[in-house]
Length: 262
Image (tube, rainbow, N blue to C red):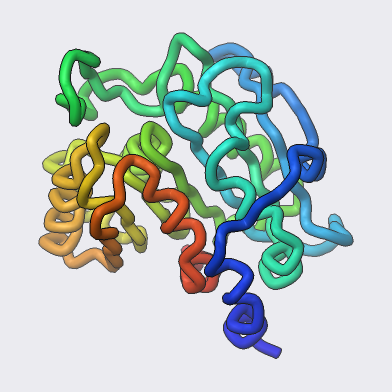
């Protein structure tokens, strides 16, 4: 049975809100990466019946700004639950890594002040890469080296600050990833060029987002289309700064993501 057919069979499950008990997150092993830029707590999920002789897709999941810290727990609050649902794990075996950004850093080099909402965001990729994003990329490269990863199927997704980090990771490391799913993020749209346009994107945003304006996603969609990139865009009417609940429950998101190869 194809992945597409198998996933249609479980789409009803994904179409509703998935409620998982906290102990289900024990499926994600706790680890700490130690790199030249510092330490990075992260969780890792292996496929069921993991076989080191096989090669698996790798997904890097970047959380939002409110989940920064070092408890190695908060980064699982939003989005990750959809990846550990049993039917999803069965249909799409992969290695998932969910790092936790340090409290004193961000996934993106964006500058902003919390004086008004939606936030006034200054994206400029001439800024130095943040410690958080550098650690996340270094971790990803180590997992690729140490585990049974299909290098042609490395994916990245993120929400809010993690959406910003996803755009920036693609900008700085376009040869690393096969596809990206970005939820309520933003980016330095002008900086994007032909190298970044080779990556397929699916971008999501709520049009009533009062934290990160939907205009940031609209600008990126316009830029990517101008570059003839493969881009899908889903905008949710009336949805505020929680469009990840809609995005990660999209029945076709994972079939789309896992179909992409570099």
